[in-house]
Length: 268
Figure (cartoon, rainbow, N blue to C red):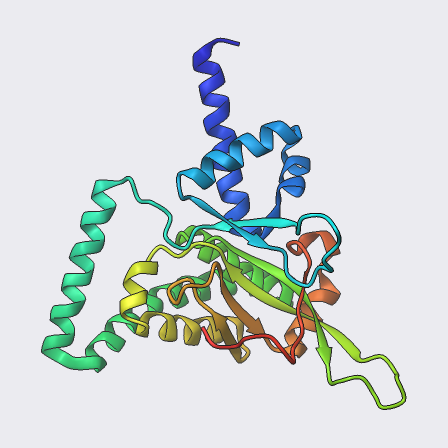
């Protein structure tokens, strides 16, 4: 293998790692090494380089008991990953300028109208795809949410589903264990308009409403990258979550995430 081939293989691995981290992060180095059949030394080298370039960040794994060793680290896409594309930066600057002038001319409602025009195109495309599926037979919740996720991926969002074990209520006085249920969250590890949405949250608010209509159920946005979180998280209703979990194989959902409903921060 010559130097050019080595460089191409390294670039390919790097791109696949960034994609995996954006979709499934937080994710541990060991899980990435196993997924891509890399040695411990190789995965550490790639992750160290991505971390040094500011593309990924380290997070201490939540809800893991601390042992005598070092806490396990997991990786996410950096909230402010560097943008080396001058054209992208110029387009973003122009979009921010346009929105500022639009707000000056028409106020908050003008921004909301613009945001709705953006997501209305998503909804129209979703309806076309949904109708094609519906013509073949009943569309189950798992297929409906998959249509939404596939559309978001095409729009530049790294979207995935994650099962979440939710604690319902405190332990009983008699020492009985708490009840738990498995719900499902939609996660977006990348946002093409992140910096713009940070200054104009109307984009996130209108996007959440559009997701609710496409999914056909109420949803709750728990966090956004625009507000500084490492992933946009949208909580689905327990009824839809149960239907999805029932009709999808375990392996079809992204890596397991455990959380506690009583302590989970819900503000973006």
